Image 1 (cartoon, rainbow, N blue to C red):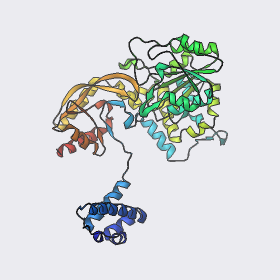
Image 2 (cartoon, one colour; image 1 turned 90 degrees about the vertical axis):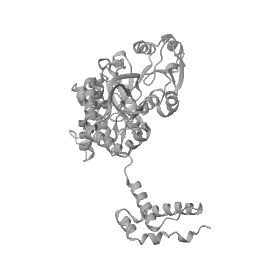
Image 3 (cartoon, rainbow, N blue to C red; image 1 turned 180 degrees about the vertical axis):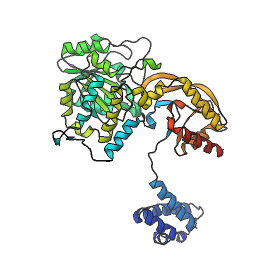
Length: 451
């Protein structure tokens, strides 16, 4: 029979010298909570006839519990997967200028909503709009907290309780089961599907337009491809039709490329500037994908429509904070100065010559004294350029249990995220930041010692 009388009380444990140090280092309330949780687990164990731990073991478990609660959960990692825009790893790392801008603005008071010249309240969008205009060629622009919010806001303000036409081939679902059709429904717009899964024509849109129709929505196939017997109208054709019928054309670009991807060996990704030239009234895109900046939803287009969207009450709920605006401002300036390839990390990764990647992988092998360099493929990721890859070279390491070794790497400080391919652990230099080489090699060596 289990003897619960041997389990110490909370007060008994609080009198122990080691526990008193926990109370002084953290707080009495937190320490008591940890003791109560640990004692609860012990009671269940005793009831199941498990061995009763002594007081020293109990205190060790309490200390471990408190340490776990106080450890940082969100940490930086080394991305050796070769996926440039890895959604699970935070997508685009920021440029040095963006990080400096965040530190300067967040570490001090700022003129976030203060007009320094007039000495009175200003708008936070003043810091970003002119840059958006210069970079994209739009008349006006504003920023919200992500692209889903951008699309929701635009549809809510401009199309609520009216018909919006979209091709069946564009009713996309992105990560987490998030669907364009659900966003449209939430906005109050009346969804009108036209065409078929693989083919849609301008006449399909024209035939669906009536006096209750206010917009056409084009959603870019950013995370999938339709191949074979397919057709879709060009954006210019849709823009001409929208102008003819006096309705709005909204272009949801998703990734929002501001550079042409073709020179980097990738297929052409529709650019924001091209959408504006084609005649789109509103263009929505992400800040943390191919723009290479912070998480943000960017809306550019017709000035009158942008002002209408900006004045809506929902805008306040979706507005970006000072960190986002500071980082995005610095990111956009890289484009304005024609230095994106040199300064924005994702474009530096994409544009890195494969010869340099091979040299780096060879240097890793030399430093480790083991492994081999093999040809491989990097991907853009982040729901951008589906099925597109870039040639690369990988550090390949052979271990009896590659998945176990990969798990050990994730426990390093900083954690290392690699790939397991053909029972080997591989590391792609393309996505490992230049200043992370030492930490990467140190982590690999440490994990090897545990083999």
